[in-house]
Length: 278
Ligand SMILES: C[S@@+](CC[C@H](N)C(=O)[O-])C[C@H]1O[C@@H](n2cnc3c(N)ncnc32)[C@H](O)[C@@H]1O
Image 1 (cartoon, rainbow, N blue to C red):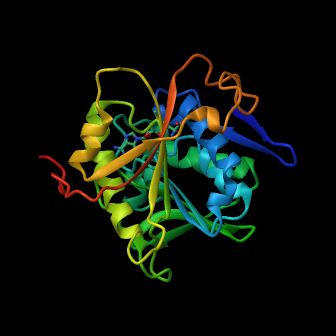
Image 2 (cartoon, rainbow, N blue to C red):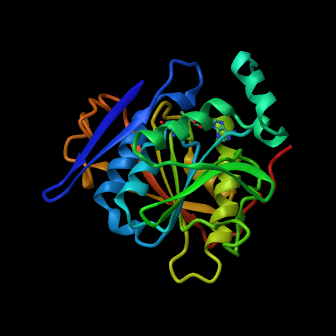
């Protein structure tokens, strides 16, 4: 299924299409948080200038596609879970026959769907390999695009300080509705912290993690979880980049869902945690 989103301001307009599939996986549906994050990027597209962008838990890919199609980012990497699917079906088995072990481990539905979303917008990618990991890559109007598997809680081996051997560490990490349950906070924040630390080395402008999430419980303290990983955040009020929060990008979403946006950076305090809890 194809879903279309239309972003505009006084002078410019952008139409982005994403691919959705009827499937129980969270990553094959476009969540309200991703529309809010995409709208933020559209309204603040000067932030993308010559930046390396990485999206975690990309799902159907709307924020990444806005980042690619605004045309000024240096690189955009779309990533999703690369663990083995919980259930194996006939498609998975045939994929496994076709590709090598690394590829077979990719959470193939999300990977395939991210690739389809790119294609719907004429962002053509080709099979490639980074540090032994299967991915898809190409250039789109000067922006380097990579689609790859990254599982939270792990140190992603695709990033490198040398562009010849990997993707550059991100200046901006994107994450929409990745903090959907307290059980994933530690893995998400572990990976974000690693990338923020490496991405900020020798830079006047330290890396940041822009994340949106749907408020599903008032009992959870994000500030506490972030402080454990040596991270701080400031909230970006969504009214500052969206006048009508009930209908963004002509989508009818986020509707009545309460979505918040945070800018997460490294704190000056020492992190209590530096490894994933057992
Ligand atoms: C609620 S969905 C949000 C998808 C998309 N960002 C959006 O807002 O529409 C959560 C996403 O995180 C991915 N995900 C879940 N667990 C993950 C993990 N351990 N590592 C990496 N990605 C994961 C899912 O595959 C899914 O794409």
